[in-house]
Length: 452
Image (cartoon, rainbow, N blue to C red; front, side, top):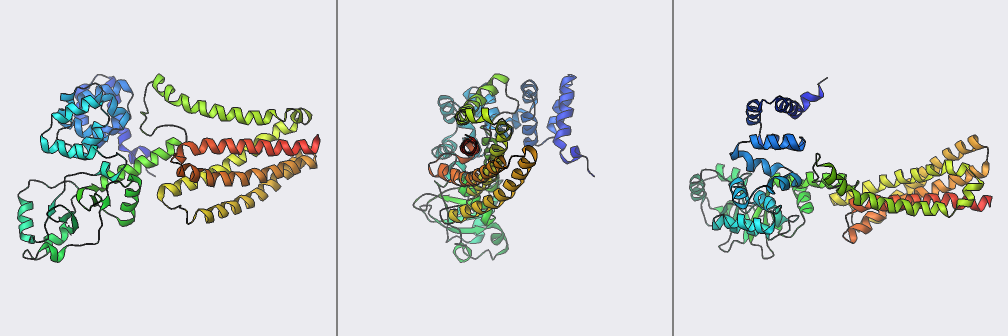
């Protein structure tokens, strides 16, 4: 069986680098960094505490700083950029792809970003400003304006001569786009077809018209879904008139998928996916304080429900012992449904056409599981306390809360999504409030009817 560290060589690099830094062998550290790809260096920076991170950044070759920067999360990017002036930022980001440069500029104060743009040549500045004019979570914010276009009347020989005049092609170029004189998208010409076909053939004879451009305002999440469904390497972006504006490549889509996954995971705990793992104590505490406050308010609300039945609890002490079971089971059952629905919404699997079917299915699952575990907890309670009424009460409360949890877990994310509130962020807190409150209310309310 493989050693876990062998499966993650970054772990070995991080350990060796940190040991070398602690021993003061900075020359050795510099040489080790030179052997790593830029993405690997970025990973090491993100995996290092602030003090070590500062040393590592100073040892990176100046020519590689910009490429490393583009792989860092926004929090760390902001920390590094905040210590640079406009001239230094312009020098650091020189040569980056326009979409990557636009992402970096969005982390800067408006004044500094403007100064960086002024330092560019007119063509590059226009390209970056075009991307910056769109929301970063849309196709326009993802696209790169560096594309190769040809006319349908051109011959393949002419296009090949044109391509050979360039030292390199834009990264991820698998297709050349065919456009009119006013840049309206007509079709595409795969490079493979271009290379193996008769040079005297015209583009119009071989071009494919099977690919419609992605609307520039389309959400990044939907763009990622299209790439996944069609196995695209790149895709054109067009405006409302069909004019080609740029293209999106698979590396940008991978970033969207990764960010979406991290967002869903971190939002469940009220955290930001761009948070620095090794951020200072005060900064981390400040970011978490708000979410803890929200949770405190919901906990107080659930406690107020319990307070309404204080006399019942005083009369039957066993209720206080059994009460958490009902709320906990409802919370777990609701979380299962909530997670499923949030995932379905993120993947585009759930919509008005099938949400009712999903709700009925979840109610059926809740009823079956509720009946099963209600019988189990009812039997356990009967054996434990020799009180038939108490066993019936907890069994009934369990059924009520599990069915309520299924309804809340299915409907809450749909409702939040409809009113443009992130269900991954707000869903878990709302669900916990519902399942705790209904669990306590049903259990203690039934107990009050039976005992008082």
